[in-house]
Amino acid sequence: GQPFSLANLKEIRRLADEHGLTVVVDASLISENAYLIKQREAEYHDWSIKAIIQEIMGQADIMYLSGRKSCAVRGGMIATNNEQHFKAIMPWLPVYEGFLTYGGMSTKEIEAMAVGIREMCDDNVAGASVEFIRHFVERLIEKGVPVVTPPGGLACHVDAMRFAPHVPQHEYTAGAVAAAIYLASGVRSMERGTVSMDRDEAGNESLSDMELARLAVPRRVYTLSQIEYAVDRLAWLYAHRDLIRGLRFVDEPPVLRFFFGRMEALDGWGENLVRAFQADFGPDL
Image (cartoon, rainbow, N blue to C red; front, side, top):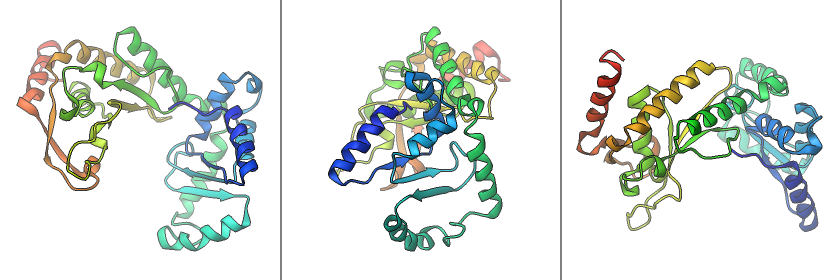
């Protein structure tokens, strides 16, 4: 969830021009990126979010975005300032999405995206998720919970290999921590580790370099009290982390196992964790 800097992007633009390369910018979280540029790059402290976004777009030949992020609406967009690129992309649009004039999106979604584009240029909107994530990360650090630092603009990431070092990677450390977080709090996190990797050609696990449980914080969804609830439950879970064990697949599709596979807890550790939780908080939570 860390931003790219405008200084870095401008250097990429310079090198691309020297070598005749196309610069493509993923603008899905461009609002949050601009907010962090405003905070971290002295040259842009006094710039508006809108001006920073325009400066970023001025360095790109093609930009694309998922509307679900900064625009807060279903759909997406590809834009270019190059007619050749436009004509090359155009025939593929009806194949995969819809006709050129609507791209598979309804009128109300297009109108909502227009509103989202305007709103994401507001400092308060652009910084909402960033500030919530910063608070989330700092509070977990206070509680001693291992997280990835510095906080960025995407999510709070729990470092599962430090959270539950006794769970080996081949038993899906991050997946086990994500499951435990849900049992202890009802909060859904996202495994970013070995479960998300494909097996190699011989069928062996490809162990991930990192094992993370990602706790995303969408804007306009949560209040700080809900963040504090998650902090409290994660702190409790970390104090009882010895109860967490590994997972195994009971249904593992050959592709996209991360989305469609089914897993179960080894040795029924989930039930032991729930019993410990109920002993501390009561049977009704």
